[in-house]
Image 1 (cartoon, rainbow, N blue to C red):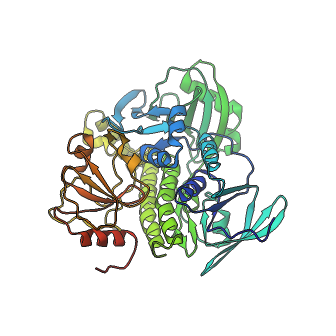
Image 2: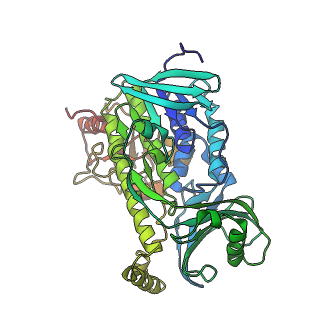
Length: 507
């Protein structure tokens, strides 16, 4: 390797969806990265398959959502069964006027392939290196030194920052000796991708105590190319080696799908954990995705949460590297995405308790909830088969300016911006490049704010979702940073902008 190569601003370790998303986002903001991965091929098996609306909106900004949606299986309806009967169904996106669907199902390796191809659009900004394994990380006040082993020899690499996106077993986390605290769950699950011709709709079907898998739980999802994802609870005493044998898997699948022909494409037996780092930022080393936090696969919170990490981090890191924001802005990444991780872990742990009751009282509670849920909406809120991924609100965090009295509008500071159709496309197409003021209707906007302005018409869905007369400051990650009262002064807007940049308060 050339030991005199120019020092990159950022080294990203791990070329999975999170690492690639960070690299692309930084490239869109003019920041170069070297991406290191110790593999030389995309992994087998579908692994993560459910990509939520907010994640798709982020992927759309990165330039890959179009082919994802075209290729994936779009769905928004879920059905929950107890034994042979349907308890209830739900619609995750009952309203129109959004570019992205509630969810698509697309195997992770296909998403990674699209992201790798998108990286090639930035040859001067993204240096993607396969079979380059990080064996030492030395943080310092002014940067990070990395020792890398590669096919043509070991070399040293220095950068201003390192982003560790290297998965649940994160070598970088291990090299720094960081504790990954949390809880391991003993329950075992079989996961199988099955190819078959079937008329199952593009919906999420979840069973408690199904007739074909007595006393356990089951999940069915449709993927492209007549592939179906099947999850079957096995219990804590199941022998993984034994359960991976086709002679054990095939009868279980046949009991579920009937006598239609099928082929096993990929199988695994897994347990899961809920863990997180106490801090995601360690000076110039920053963790994102599974290297920072892990949850159960139920609820599609792992991959989606990781992409939201990337979305939160990239704009902040770009501004810091470019000298347009203080390094303290990066501490807000730890605060904001720490909240997101805590929400995901809490929901994941509660899902596990509901799905695998460990005591007579827990089982009695679940039985009562499922009995009531068929006829009573309040009980449905208590059913937990994996609460599906939703974006985290950042309300009350340090970068947001609270909306005071007399501030018209419908969105609280900290929430992600809802999409809406406009004459020239969709609203989110206009958000995400940098900070921007968003005004609805004939709202008076003071001059000399130093910020670009987007004005929405008073009629239509955008006004219904944002509120006629509203004025917002929108962050580069499409979250609301502030909502202003009528007649707000330019100084108040500039103050909110500085706060959203992590700068000390001053007039």
